[in-house]
Length: 144
Image (cartoon, rainbow, N blue to C red; front, side, top):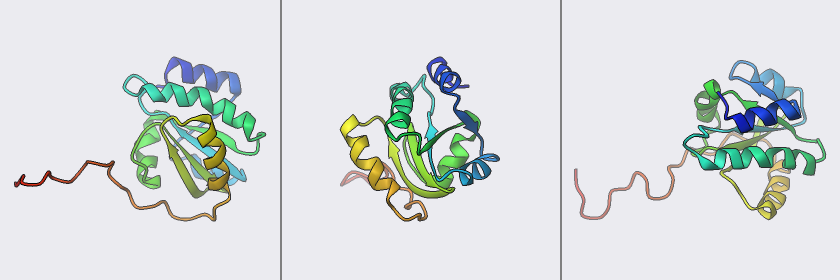
């Protein structure tokens, strides 16, 4: 279930909600897609922040990049496909092929710089999963 804010944005903007079963077919019918992974808005304050920015990005991109919203039930499975490590996230696709990801809320100027750069890339496989800084490394002197 989406936050009430995100659900109201989906309803108002007419955004399509996709699942792991429907994403490929939907994404391949559009030149560019921004795939929004909201995450749990009750735990992640930035979830609603990015939800509010999404329609503004849509307008700024002139409707040339189709927003799709990932169903909450499909988020983890698709996260494993695109290998990002933090919610909320926006994954960019060209005809269903991976271009890049933005995680968390950014300054508007950062969106204006990073999105055109992502959209200009050649499709590729997502980069290998990386743990956030500070995770997975034992402090010096600590042994098991």
